Image (cartoon, rainbow, N blue to C red; front, side, top):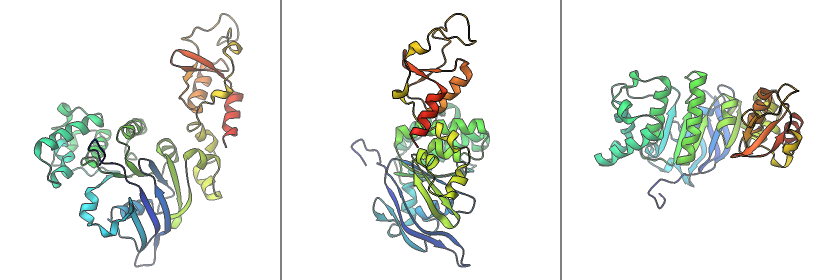
Length: 339
């Protein structure tokens, strides 16, 4: 724990980890992979490539055939598996909430097992409900069947964070909800991570989700072979193999827009756009009519505003101050310069 009493994030290291079943099937073959403390490492790859097996070896739901899984340098096989799992949050696709327990009771599961006093448990449940964006008075007494799919996922995440674990394992947690809810959950998840800074290993089959959420992406092929492990922009801009290039898709250049920041050094002066209007003639645009993005936005945001604005450029602002403008040529230059 740190000085505030919060559990600090723990690094995960897979050292030559292999999982082979009695029938000879190799789910994971000699995998070396580091998940940095406080970061989101996303595992992607085709079905059956060993993504979920990796998670289950970390919390010892499955024992590796050989190699080591280290949690902050300690071999997890030397730790009591039940005690280990109480230190690791685990979120799965279908949540797995206890149907006959209320939301509060579900979230309190691990703190109760650890013997926390009742007042401390109550405070933690309130804190977590607020953290995942659920009203304690409204949702706390409800049962899982009374919640929407998105709400159940939020409760599952809160339960996984119950005892403030150093590590969070997430196995396709948002895949069972519709695209709109999924987008909101992803946004909330990133906001939550800014607050809790856990070491998270996140499994998904969706490249767009991996790009949006991951600090680093690990691309696995059949047999758990690690094809590439790098930040999203590098995976998209410089695929390490033909397998990675094919897996991330021929539209990887478009995907890279979402992970490429606004290039402030390429901004053109405001004077180059002043006097222009949205229909090619007439009076100048007002500030409210000017297509614009924040300087902290991505090239994807800039391109979207540019296409909607109809001016042929988009202004970049820092608060109320407009710093300059970008054109389609500038976006193209920035994307290719950062390859």
